[in-house]
Length: 528
Image 1 (cartoon, rainbow, N blue to C red):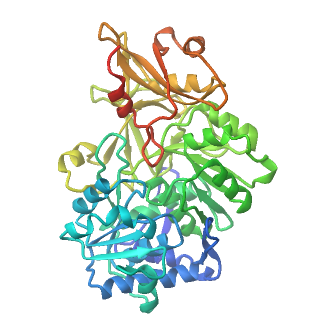
Image 2: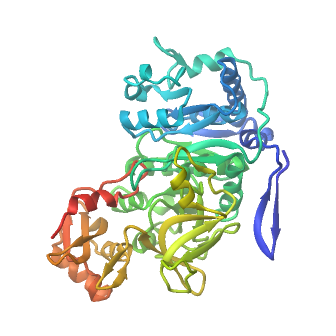
């Protein structure tokens, strides 16, 4: 399949995609000449999967789905730990025209129940370790007719993925799909409430790989990549599957939690050149007394998304490892990063500039576009915007407004086109009639040497006036008082911005993808 990038100086780059197009077929065929090269490595078991074996197994799985009677456009829920089986199942579904629905593996039985019922998935592929979370549901779901267990050779009560792959030929039979038809779903992380089934098209995977993977990261065949964000997450899917497969790079996968010890172990043993992290993890890595020396690693570029990266973390990482962190913002709705810092042009404390191929604007409360320095909601126009939220027409209409997608994030832009995060639209505080960005206060607190993590929300005082309140996690073995931290902020920011209350907590509530759930902090804060 011949795709080309059309680059013009007078307009943003775009990727030319034919009308008849299958995303999995494209990614696999790009690596037809690399059949012996390792595509994926399971860091936990040491299992490797070559591009040739991946292609063969993905087609075997596609044929297994056909043999089980799965029709094109039917849906298959994937609840799988990151392993070499994940890309086989995801790509195999797409080859067969079946729509994979990637589920967060850290959710609970009620969450999985909601997703299975909401999607009406007819099939479930589940890692054996996760099967107990699904067992109470299996007899209650009328749409579900096939359960496939991954991670084991045989199962007493269910068909295993290994059995299906052994039983089917690797005959190539690609579904006759279109670039503009539904290809896969991702459920939003639920940082503000109930997850939403976000429907993406066949064209979206390669659009993000070309525009951000190649256009910003400069990813190439010689790269080895590791993403702490899992494959079920929009950020992780691009990082660990689409981007490397688009150029033939090798991906390291970790089924378990990305603890500092595990992450540094991977960075030392497998020598990845690209590391994708999130701010929380970078903070934990920097705080780890056992962190390796720069000479032990081979990093050429790092990225951060999910939450805005505090400037202090970026500066410390670069000073220690001589490698920039490209802070950016993406979303489940846009599939990957559309606004990012770029190599050699990093300005810590900002989210960078528009990724070529995407247009951005900031819109004020009055509906008019904001000028430099004015705060408003960030909106995005680009080729990877989701089709809709499943079964949620009203939310679809409010988020996907014509060509523009509303991010729900507040931003300002300077004269150089660099964007600075101001918090979620529902997180912004108005103190004394003036907007205050919680992130600005958080960034100030993060510069204190005793602070590991922080989240700032608005809380009401005795007069029911909103003021900033900070929840602070201190570094192990470090101490600081509330007065110390308040004074620290007052030295850096305007007086009205300092947190009136500081609550020390052992940890912050987060989604499974690392985003701080400020709505839970607001619920617990009450009045003052």
